[in-house]
Image (cartoon, rainbow over all chains, first blue to last red; front, side):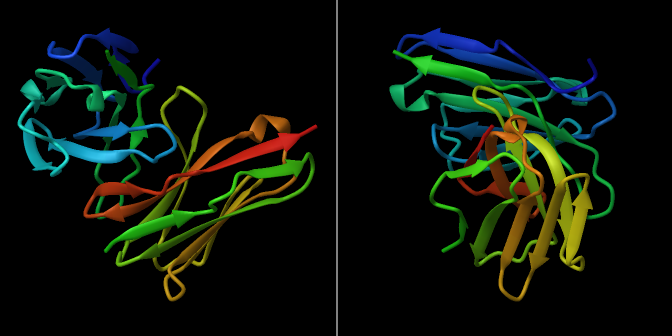
Length: 115
Length: 110
């Protein structure tokens, strides 16, 4: 399977714990995005990378959230001191920028439940 | 403020009929607009992209229109099948990142 993969698919944690999610993009894609989706809503942008550079972060991304993309390949999203409000589906997407048009391909998501 | 609105009600239709979904937006100037399908518990799957200078795009039983004057896109599923049952998301280009509507849930009855 050459699509976007995410790990783990599900994560249950207690409030105050740290969690880390991983995303492996489609291999030739240079952009990688993280989104968050809550029930009944569309995905909301969190941050994105062009190769290894983090180019933009949403105001939704508090100081407890950090993302990395070392060597411009896979990416990790870490949430420190989780809160119940962090419970959501975390989606990763990747794209190959061609001019000013790109299609983002999404992974299956990591569903986080904070107890 | 920026807003993307999709059909507020879920759509229930009979197999074989055409489903028409709307996406209206305010305070955006997207260079392109995309439609995605999302099944419960899964990530969105790309369906179609339409550019601002295109009026209509088709792919198999799917058709998308884009009216930048009305700030609206319509998404049609013709000859609908039970397998088309899913949530459909409209997404606007917003300086490369995507801004999504809340989605419209379509149920096709056999």
